[in-house]
Length: 41
Image (cartoon, rainbow, N blue to C red; front, top):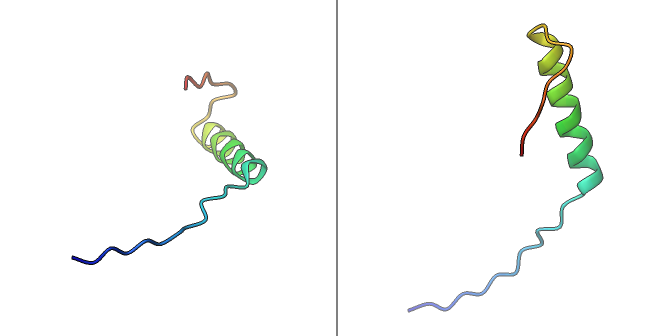
């Protein structure tokens, strides 16, 4: 049996992810005609 150990860097740029998700929710909200939404996480 092979015992392979691979280290993967899972570092996330949280500022970039936050901006991408915020822009996506904003654009999709406006696309369907809403002005405001409530996002529950």
